[in-house]
Length: 444
Image 1 (cartoon, one colour):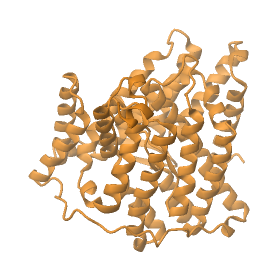
Image 2 (cartoon, helix red, strand yellow):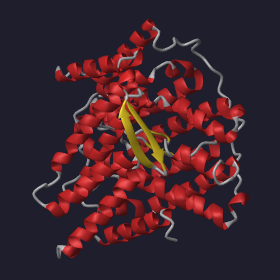
Image 3 (cartoon, rainbow, N blue to C red):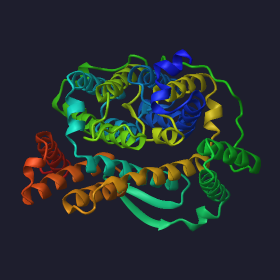
């Protein structure tokens, strides 16, 4: 048995090197889009001259932090600059509020430091352990629907807009369904389903690669023009402006980053842990402190390099579904980010959305299975769980879904006379969310 097999405890988790490597490749392929989407969004705040640096910074922050997750926390969770958080960074903080991108980076840096303190003192893990198990499983299912929506939206099947963070559906886009990318998406979806029905290992990865090749051949997506690129992070490295945070408005920016990142990470970690089978009978996440500390370090490191908040990715579920159960999966993902993101980024860019979207939809199907663990015979448990599952995709916000679930759970339990069954921290969290929602609604 090799050092890797002993260190990552392959025998304990019933896995092997081939499965872990395959899972790592699958996770990477599912989230490689961030190498290009993140620079595209952040360059709107930093300028087009920052684009090349942002590609390298995205790869570095994702690669280094995910490797730390693998070697230190030993979990198959990948990290990268978070979608939504990069949008808030660019369109709300920089463009909307008028802060410089250097000040916005400083806000992310301070947020990361706060998370490190909370993780070391075990406050974050205490919060996770205080959450009832029905809410944890509901979060996993809600994230599954969220992924499904992202997959359908990526190929244009659903026309939708967001107003103040609230999702507005308009129609089913039939023209997209019969377009060349739409037909290739449908092929990928059905091909993946057939492979899974035959229990073929690596079904998601096989589908992504096969659909991509078909897209290149048919002209639905461009072939890679070249394979190699030269990394350069000089434009964004260590450019944060800490002095610019010394005003009340900037403190509000830190708070907003803090709230969204805290509860998005909370939901992602609990959802992924539920799917991977890590949760104990009491619903606790083993080694939660290590996972959350790694996440916090990633945020701080990312800000120093020059990107918005780095967070644990729900796309890690793709690798978990392929059998990834140890840090070896994360190690593979991290190395691929460094290799491809720094040196052969154009190859990752050539993977079209219609090839990765079927994987997101199928992962959504997998994650929905966690909802069967909720006791639907007890409305006090089931109704708050349902509200979580419903609100995460409908509001396009993991944190909003968690908040609605927490508030409804504590209120229903209280009126049922079971308030003593609610962990004290749940009351605190419900109150924080109520205040946060009131703040967003302009009550303060």
